[in-house]
Image 1: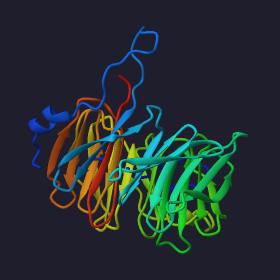
Image 2: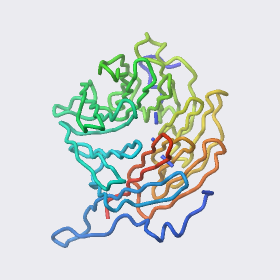
Image 3: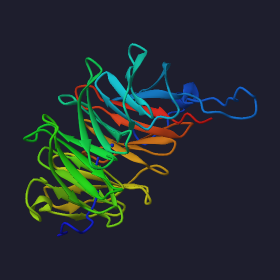
Image 4: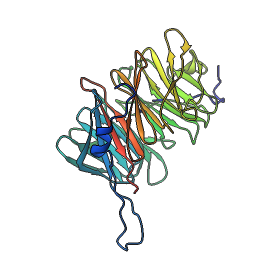
Length: 338
């Protein structure tokens, strides 16, 4: 068990039969073209392209949507994709081929979406203070701004908690914050160390991954006195670079080993690792699958059988975002640098 002054571990976002689909690749997996700047002197950044993958593995490029090449992060909900960039956030409706930009008074750093609690964006304010913006998707307006002591670098939302909670990690400062999503009040904060890599939630607690300790630690609540706020079963997992969580399973990415570890929470057991593609970066869950974003491919893993399939891209991937709900959909942002 770690105490309040000891670094612990890191959270949650990505990923048919292990078959490459040549027709898809040939039909248009090239999302970006080489271009020259206005002086004709060399390559320039091109707009990123947005792709979608449905539950059957069908890939589609949304050519009517161009995303600036300086995107910082992405999240998705049913029918919408949200992309943060240096000046704000872009709300995209792919089916309609339209998007709108919402300017923010600061620089966004991370984004998460919940169907009930809306869009949450962490960022850095004009005075280098930490900020957390809550945006109503219907009105595309900022309905709440929370001032934080440090810049958020990763968020996780627990809508079913009491009160509904937004968890914030700031690895540069080594802190975790627990925010009441209704009031915007800081319910608790504590120092956990600077090697946090990610945070994810299930219905009752947060899971924090620590890549240097190679461990994952549960955090029930930060409004409890130390050491009870991180009481529970810790898991030693190689890598611990990114997390995704359900009620019964943790999925932990080991980027260096190019594999994912399933952690059975009911049996308190770290399972056999599952190999993924080259240079994985992010993981995310939908209703049936774990999705892993690799350098130029996406690996889809069946959450029950652990069977894998691979979809290849011809350009590096920037971000992926998964959606929960009746329709499985994974959104992919292809690198915009030619």
